[in-house]
Amino acid sequence: MKNEILHDSGILKEENVLLDEDPIINDPDKKRSDYYVVERQTKCPECGSEDLIGDYERAEIFCTECGLVIDDNLVDMGPEWRAFDHEQRDKRTRVGAPVTYTIHDKGLSTMIDWRNKDIYGRDIPARNRAQWHRLRKWQRKIRISSSTERNLAFALSELDRVSSRLGLPRSVRESASVIYRSALERKLIRGRSIEGVVAASLYIACRRCSVPRTLDEISEVSRVTKKEVGRTYRFLSRELSIKLMPTSPIDYVPRFASELGLSSEAQSRAIEIIEKAMAKGLTSGRGPNGVAAAALYVASVLLTERKTQRDVAEIAGVTEVTIRNRYKELTENLDMGITL
Image 1 (tube, rainbow, N blue to C red):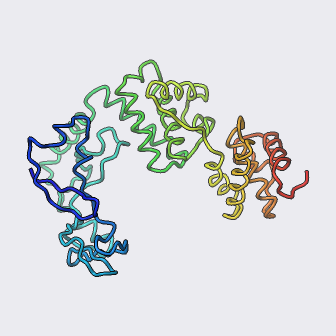
Image 2 (image 1 turned 120 degrees about the vertical axis):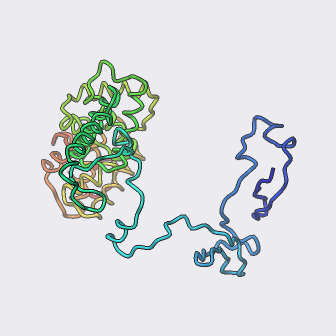
Image 3 (image 1 turned 90 degrees about the vertical axis):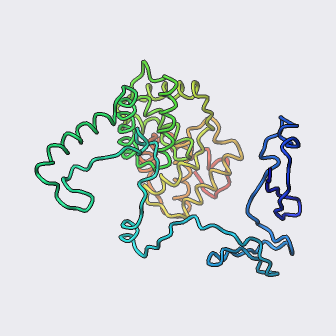
């Protein structure tokens, strides 16, 4: 059995390994990846330089220092055609949309277009339109054939609606869809509302992807109470063994600053203030959105981009009293040149 083994010298060589001498068979505790490792060169084996250039016209990788050709059998994994604008790319591509977890069938089902046109754009004859109507109807029925698929289709449409209202990116939607699918496979949906599980999945996904949203924000657009979202979130994190780190106040700064119209310099100053406060333990036991709001308020005062405490409190979803308390703690414990 012939395998490629990466030696200490950094050069790929081929060695014959007999089946009865296979180290995996002799040592079952070892993984096959421990012995057979093949990876692209990142260093020249001749002079040790890391300045390598890929010439894809000649399918070669060579060193710019000594000229050694390191690899001469590159494979171009792209399409064989070229496109110079978006219209050409759409015409020449032969693949569909990528697989996504935000659709109940992962986007792999066939759809019959509602327009009575064939693949070439010609009108379908009138004698065949009744047949196409029946095909569309049966296609819609068989696309969602079980109660599980119906549940998933409704839940993912609700997830898409809530995500759009919150302005969440695609990565968060994909992560929330995977969490909901895991809960559905474990039969954790029984006895709970679909909207509540969707909201809890979104809350977990937001914290995982460092795009935090508060329970108040999610409950406001998801048609369930904050108490139910929190209860379902704790249930899912326990049953699915999801470990989440506490939300950092820094994660809230870009969104709050954008909504307040503050400059990038104010964002940077607020992040510096939060990092100093975290180093001194001033953020422990404090709500992260309140700390972020207070840091932005301090930064706006220092940079003469002053915003009122009411404006900051409305954006952050906290009270003005919270802003004043956090502001007082920051100015008293950090040397920022601000007198109360």
